[in-house]
Image (cartoon, rainbow, N blue to C red; front, side):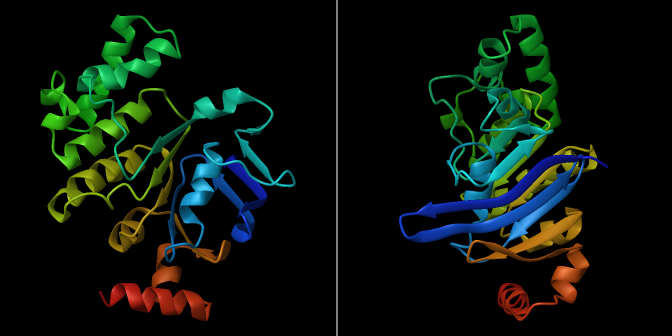
Length: 242
């Protein structure tokens, strides 16, 4: 398998704080990677750097499909991102939210963009909400719209930044179900999550981060059942007790 995401020596500072302290990571096409770790460990900063929402040290290298993202803006089009907050446009219908980027960025016809929107709305289970506005939907439905909107651009990599953390508990499952379906369909996914059950069930690989570094990475069973590092063991034990 070829690496769709290649990261070398990724460093990011906020003032004197080392948010990322030299991260190396390769993600293969079709792979589902979950990133876990305590708050402030650099998880969200890592994926925000991949999507160029944060700049990073000049000595660092981030490539998408072999293209250096700092050298070629087209690499960004290969990356879709779903945030904690849904970031939908409140004055646009669900259909308009999904078709906006294909129409404006990819210069698709309305017919093409609507066909893609119809397919994606059905895929994430919101086809009945097409003509509603975000404020008329539940949090879980809005997050499913956000997933469909990100997929509408046909990205090669999907980034998720704690996509269920802003949801009421009863809505978490419906969003995770959509993400499970995406994983089964072969979408390359990098997911920052606190949902350990999801990570154990869906991930090909789990990465544990702490203090801006990857402490340990491996199959879910290795990380959750037999971690090699004491810091990973402490984290897993604390999380699984709750």
